[in-house]
Image 1 (cartoon, rainbow, N blue to C red):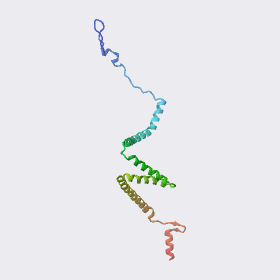
Image 2: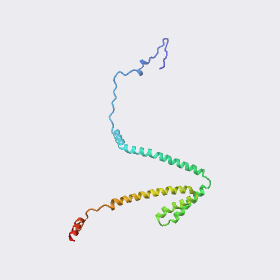
Image 3: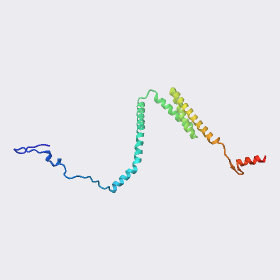
Image 4: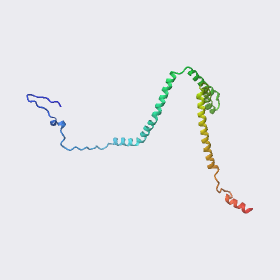
Length: 188
């Protein structure tokens, strides 16, 4: 508050005399206005959409790190291709061309079209990068062995459950199998 002097006798303004700082004399009470139809509709809409928005937020929080790593991988790949080692692009051309040759040789069968190009490209890549090819084959072989073993165990369990169950009485045209055994025993 700025104090001013007016005239010969300096009159100063006191803060407690200003209405801005005075306390209201009556008791104040907060009264909430009734909700309008629009506010009710928006409230119902928000309540209805809340599970979906929380699901979207959860998906976003799970996907964001993966997308960031994918973008980083793309930037690193771009940087690598900008400063590629000598001889990289001719090797890449030979590997890509071998995939096209595999696609051309795989006429007719859809399975051949799925198998030949990767096999040809793998063979061409193994010529240029033999150490990485050996590691890849070892790891792939171990995984294929594990998958085969798991498949064998599943088939064995299914065989034991379904095929080797002891059969109960079988009802046929002439009655149950127990009745047939009794008829055969009494006939002999």
